[in-house]
Length: 152
Image (cartoon, rainbow, N blue to C red; front, side):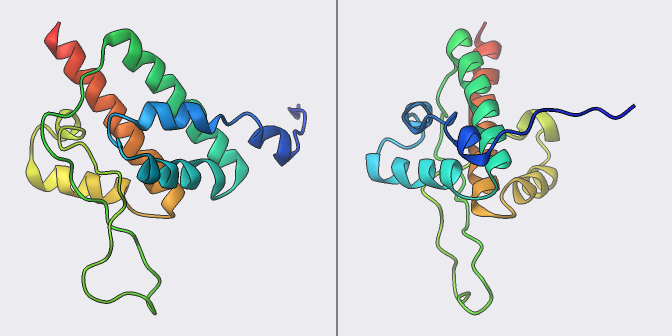
């Protein structure tokens, strides 16, 4: 038996994404409006529409959980997230995105092992900019939720 689902045009899917809501949920990690707008644009406008919508749905879900648990912001400065540049533009230290990775984001998964945390952080921060920034934002929200739960 073949399952079919209705096809939605990309424009209908893209219309679901509310950039203002994305901006608001990123505010704790990106207080600068210009930097926040840059990250929101990449998450909401770059890459395939289904990826953008999926990232939006997951970020909104985590933001809802964060709000209900009273998620706490990071206690220390985040880890820089390097921009992956094409080989012909690479050279020296790569520039970094304005959104940093919460250093506590992977501790629960790695058991605090530095090498494992570094490998997981590298996996989260690899790939197209849309994926990288959505992954980091989700990890940051999850870390804030875990801090709130540990406080209880």
